Image 1 (cartoon, helix red, strand yellow):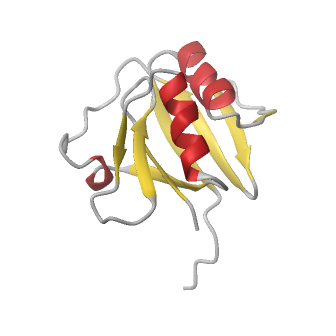
Image 2 (cartoon, helix red, strand yellow; image 1 turned 90 degrees about the vertical axis):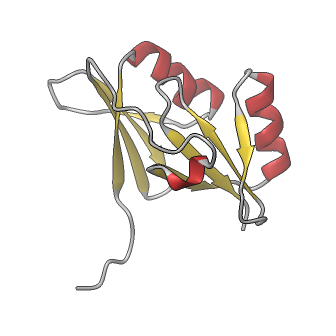
Length: 119
């Protein structure tokens, strides 16, 4: 088996409207049409998709000191400093990568961890 790309990640969210604001407005991802009947929203990032799925309860993360050790989505950004400033402008918590590489971690409103890195 040879895996060549990631197609999508499904993320459980407890407040779909709040999550859509974060992914669509704060991160600026384009929303795409979806034909499924359960509540959710899909976003496109290049050839990759993020699927938000509405749920009643989201499991809590295990690692609070190093967010990168939790389940997370990794996204590449063109300008890490600009991304950091945008997150701070929206009062988002951020954490630099413990590895020392140019990356940072943030959380969506439900505590899902997102890694942003610049290559």
